[in-house]
Image 1 (spheres, rainbow, N blue to C red):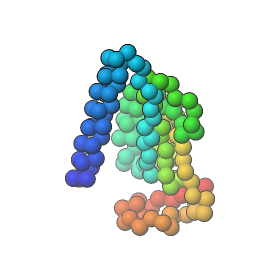
Image 2: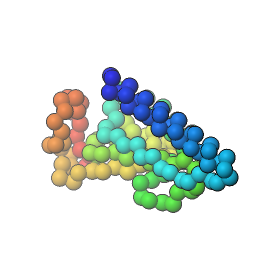
Image 3: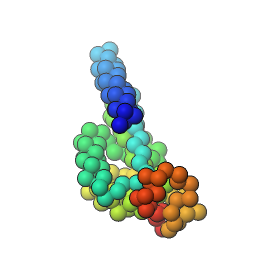
Image 4: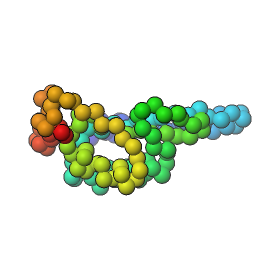
Length: 136
């Protein structure tokens, strides 16, 4: 829990700096440069589905969702890309419906050597206990 709070405080500090930097740039008559934040996830369990949906609604209302494919970013616009590591089946089952509804593109990195299997590289008991498998 402490680790999450520290991450949250760091995120708030970075966001505050971004707001101040953007305001200062506009005060001197320049347009702020474009930037893109990449949000990465692993799996979205059924229990996390509503929290993920809320995050994506906030994302869609706050920034311009973009893909990880390197499309052009517009100056003065906040962009965000969503990616999923590991290619867990829970992404298709629990995240994809929300992403489609919010029209948010996403990139999924799928390890081809584990298609349809449990991830062989996962050591964390928490992920193993979820019964995650790799999509096919």
